[in-house]
Image (cartoon, rainbow, N blue to C red; front, side, top):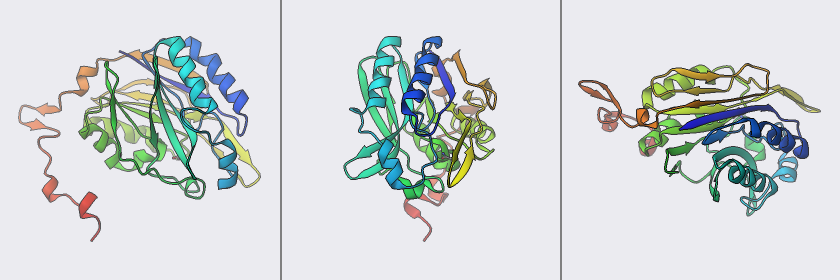
Length: 268
Ligand code: ACM
C-alpha cells in the first residue's frame, strides 16, 4: 500500500487559493492514501468563533469535502484532510475521510489547543477506526498527539495507520510521534502545514517537517520545514498487526490496565 502526505502553505481566509494549491499538488501524488493538513482550506489563526463560523462548512455537503471527494474519485484513492466543520449549532475542528466511492467519515478533534477552545467545540465522538480494505485507519488532529491516549485508543481499536492532519506550532510532535508509533506498533502520517498566519491579533508560524513513521519508529519519509512537498512511500500494513516485541513480550497483551489511572478512574 502506498501512503502519502501533502505539505502545503495555507493562506488565511483564501479558500479558493488553498483549494487551488492542493489541486495543483494532488496530481503529482501516486498513492492509495493521502493525508492533508489540518484546516487546509481556510488557514488556522481565527480571531473569534464568529470568524471561524464564516469558514466552517457542513460535512459532507460543503465545498471542501466535495472537492476532496472529486479528487479521491479522480485518483482512486483515500484522502484524509482537516476541515472547519459546522454541525447543527456547533463548530468543530474536523478531519474527513473520503474514498473513491465518496464520503466515509468525519473525526472531530477531541483535544483543542489554546485559542481553539474559543473557536470550536471539542469533539464528542470517541476515537474510531475505519477499515478501508487495504488498511484500518484512525484519525487524530494535531494537538491530539500530546495525549498518548489518542494513538493508544486508535491502536487498541485496531488501527494500522494513524492519519494525522496538523498545523503544528510547537517543536515537539515530530520526535514524539516516533515513540507513539513504537509503543503502539502503528504507522503514522503527520501532514503539517508550512508558512505563517499573520493576523491583526498576532502571528503563528507553522513548523512543516511532515513525516511518515513506521511501527518500528523509523522515519520513512520527512519533508523540510518550509517547502511545499508531497511524498509517498510503499508500506507493508501487516507490520502494524503483530504487537509482539520479544519472545516474551506483546505490547498489548502485556498491558496491566488494572494498575493504570486515567480514563474511567479519572483524577479522583
Ligand atoms: C494544533 O493543535 N493545531 C497546535
